[in-house]
Structure formats: structure tokens, C-alpha cells
Length: 287
Image 1 (cartoon, helix red, strand yellow):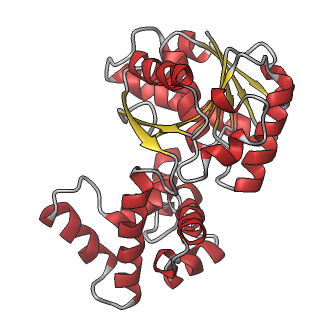
Image 2: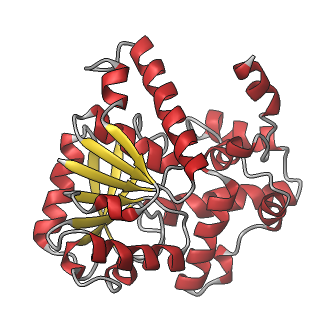
């Protein structure tokens, strides 16, 4: 199967890698050439680590060769499936779905990796609403087993079944969610992360204290503030804004300290600084 992935960031590159690891030919599209280069480099690095752990069924070079890069979505004209993983902005995604609808065959399923945005709003920009669904992977995509499959009100049973079956063939565990703001995962996760930032704002505890309580006291594998850094603080703000707007409640408003960090460019691991400082580890990793 020929798979198109739109977006070469953390999620897009991880999705492309996952499909390639499972034998699919992938075209990864991003408007920024530099982002494509970073995405391909990330994939090569990830494959090398998995090879060291003997977790690949093919040589890393062979898997990487299944992925080609392009800067124009017209390159997806021959795709059998497209997974959109662009920035979490409703306007951006809606315009992209309208474009994908024009350049792909009408039988192709258009899936979105959105973590919070209405699937039906994306489907409405196409002539194939029955063939639009959510396919929300978790980060890091090659490792995390869950895929949140989102059924829009016009998603056909055939499309839903195809995405569920595909997720299983990728070695993932699919869970079906209704098309509601935040779906299942972020409807629960993001308010918890936001509450951790509010507790930090109020000096209830230090960042380390808050994360330690959740890892040792609640048996979470990673604390909410470190998890926010991993996800990207800008992504957390974007999702909270969707929840606040679409659920019509101020209780979902992003915490002031979360907004401040994003305004300062401290986006988490990807920028080297977020709640925590990762610059030193970056230097050591490239030394």
C-alpha cells in the first residue's frame, strides 16, 4: 500500500516510520524542506536505535529507503491512504483536507492525526465525508501501541473498519472514540497537565515535586510536566484552546505559566527548554 503522510514533524515522521517499518511505501510531505530533512534524520536515528535493540525485521537502510520526501501534496496523487499530521490548527487542517480531496483518488481514505479537532469539520471540506476519520497516534509513534480511531458522524462503517484493521496490522491497539472535543485521550490528559501547571503557578510544589507525586504516588510512567515538555507546550496550549472553545467552559483555559513559557519560545524538548532545561543533554548527545 502506498501511504501519504502530511507533516514531517515529530508525529508525521513517526507515522511515516511506522508505516515503512511495516512494509509500506511512504511519501512524506511538508512545505518546509528543512523540516523534511529533520524528519528524515529523526527517522534514521530512531531506526538505528531500534536496530541496536534488535527490534527491526529488516535493515534500517532498507526501511528508510521506503520513505520519499516531497514539498507538494500533488505527490500524493497515487496514494492509497493519506494520514494528515500537520500543526494542530483547525484552519490549516481544513484547508489541507480541501486540497487533499482535490489531488487524491475519490476512493482514498483521508485520516487525520489530530488530537482534538472535529473530524466532521475536516470531512465537511471534502466531497467524501464518509471516507474521513481520525487516526490519532501516540508519541513516540513507533513505540506506543495505542491508536485512537475517531468516528465522525458521517464516517462510514467501511472506513471505520478499514482504519481499525490497519491499526491492528501496524501492531497497534485501536480504540474507537466519538467525534467530541479532545476525543478520549486529550479530554482526560490535557486537563490533568493543565492542573499541574496551575499547581506550579500557585507554588503548591516544585516541578520535580509535582512530577514525583504523579510517578511514585499514582504510578504514572512520567510526570505531567515532563510529559508536557515531551508533547510540546505549544501543542498543549493549542489542544486546551480547542477544549475551551468547543466545550464552552473557561475551566479548560490554558494555565498562565503554560502560556508564558510558549510565548518565551520554551516549547519543551523540541526547543531545548520547557518546564525543564534540555540544552545540556542536547550538547552531550551531539558531542
